[in-house]
Amino acid sequence: MISVFIMLPILFSFLYQLSTEEQLSFKYLLQRSTCDHCHQPLKFFNLVPILSFCVQRGRTSCCRERLSVYYLIGECSALAGAFLLARELPISHSLFIALFLLLLTSAISDLVSLTISLNLLFVFLLMCVVLFHCDWLQFLIVLLISHILFFIFRFGIGYGDILLINFLALFLPFHLFTYILLFTFVFAGLFAIIVIICGYYRRRLMIPLVPFIFSAFCFVMATYSYLFGGELL
Image 1: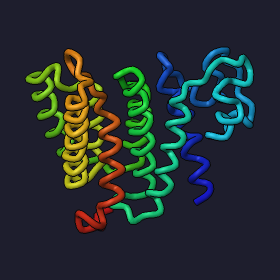
Image 2 (image 1 turned 135 degrees about the horizontal axis):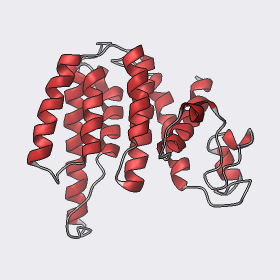
Image 3 (image 1 turned 45 degrees about the vertical axis):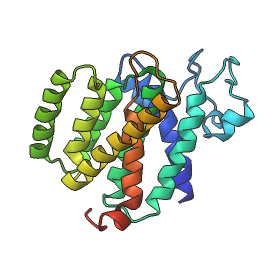
C-alpha cells in the first residue's frame, strides 16, 4: 500500500512531463526525467512527489525557475488512486491504474491547455492493447456514433474528448462505460449551470471535459459495489 502511495504520484509526474513533449521518441522513455526549463537530469530528491515541491517552494533546484503548480495538484490527486485500490473494484487493479493515470494526466493537460496529448494516448493504447482484453465491437459502435455526433455538434465537444471516450470504450465493460459517460455529462452539466448562475458566463462557455471524465471514472469505481450491484471484473 505504501509503495502505491509513492509510485502513483511519481508515475503521474513522468506522464505529465511526457504529455508536454511535442515529439515522442523511444529514447525519451528510457532516459532520466529532466528539468522543464534547463533540461538538466533531476536529482533523486527532486523525484520525491509532493515533498520535493514543498521543500523547494515550487521552484526547480537547478535553475530556480518556477514549477507548474499542476505538478502538485496532479501528485496530490494521484493519492486518491491508492485509496480506490483498497476498495472492491469492478475491473482489475492493473487496468484501473492504467486508466486512472491516463485520465488524471489528460485531465490536468485539458485544464491547462484545453487539449490532450496524442503521444500519451498512443503510448497507453499500445500498452493496453497488449496487456488487456479489447472489446472491438463495442469500440467500433462507439467510434461510429461519437464521430457522427461530433460532426453534427462540431463545437459542442473537442475531438480529444472523443478520442478518450473511444479509448475507454475499447477496454471497459459496457455497463461501466455507460455509467462513466452518464456521470461525466451530469457533472459537467451541473458545473456549467453553477458557472452560469454565478455570472461567470462570457460569450461561448469553454469547459474542459476530461476532468469530468476523470471525476466520473473515480466516482463509478468508488461506488460501483454500493450503487450498481458490485462485481464484474
